[in-house]
Length: 229
Image (cartoon, rainbow, N blue to C red; front, side, top):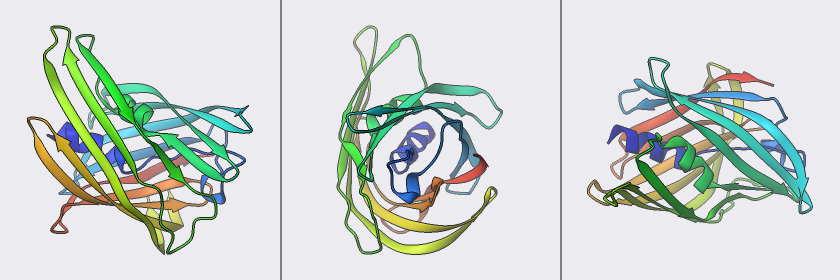
């Protein structure tokens, strides 16, 4: 269950950059971001290190490619891979299928099939704006054909709620707070409904994210710990 919560935390937040993006996503090639995830008791559970490795024009916009590595609390590599996103006319669009695939531990005996929508961050976001919903489906099977995981997650009621100051180990940031609800239906593990919030800083992207259950109790969080521009 802990691995599932870590996986779901990444659904609630991820960011890329580009010159054509709004000021909240203006990152640069070579930029390195480190975020730590925490459980409901604020104990570290994993560290994610991400680097912008490529930026190139595509279809009138800009494609970004990021290398990502996830480590456990003892520094052991759990997963690695690439994620991508595009900026066009100020909108930032990320493929959450790439993100979720990278964050699931790999095995030669496990086959993953991931389908989903794009996560859109429109240009000129401001307090009070409503943002597009998204959805994702993940299935995994053993080589024998036995089904292991089946997750259907919908992200809804996305809105820009406020401007807030967020202090992290990497510095203090003025952030745009975005909230939404994620309903995850997981075969064999039951259903979960999480209320998520993410905080976007100009020139950085997401610096913090929190997940709460329906009763308002914290379930997990992520925080920016290192930033190299």
